[in-house]
Length: 133
Image (cartoon, rainbow, N blue to C red):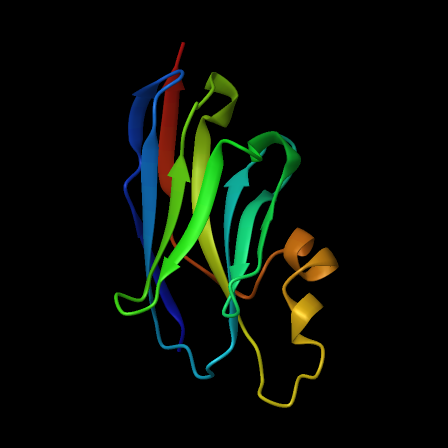
């Protein structure tokens, strides 16, 4: 079973930096999708950034140029480096994972589009980020 455990949330001043971590375990296949999501008032979760096992990344428009998603494979840890943070970045952040079966032929787009927007299958418990002005 896929397990995700986030850490690194906390309080930071606007313009500062914060790095979130997510330990990933139990992936059954060599190919996968991983992402960071956040709670948006009036909505469920918004996709912030995603990465797949081939290294392809995607970002929500409001975080492009400020946030960076990366994966340390030997440590099985997903990161979200948040820089130039803004008060509107304040919310709960989740990491999420999707397994990709070996018979899937369209892996280059598997982690994007509707699947990313709706959210992946497995979720962590969330970590709170507070940005003060």
